[in-house]
Length: 99
Image (cartoon, rainbow, N blue to C red; front, side, top):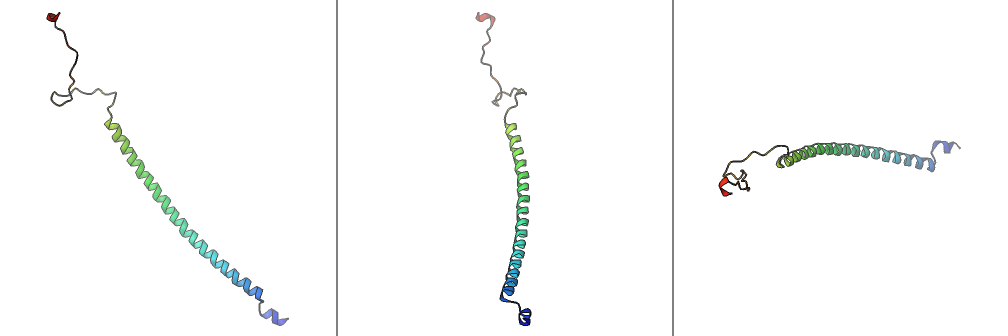
């Protein structure tokens, strides 16, 4: 019996080897998971930056789009003849002598 107590059995040696292998695997998995987590945080941070830039460009687009449309509350000033901006009346005024 003293011989058995000094030397671990095959089962004990195999159990210890597998435990070390599993522990090593978990440590590697934990390290890889931490790297993945950092990369995901970087991607999410970049996405938020792109959202800010996209929002800014969308605001600029809306501003330019609204600026190109005439404002209904403002009357357009009459243009100068020769510039294409003046309004020519199509109604004919009648003089007293035409009657």
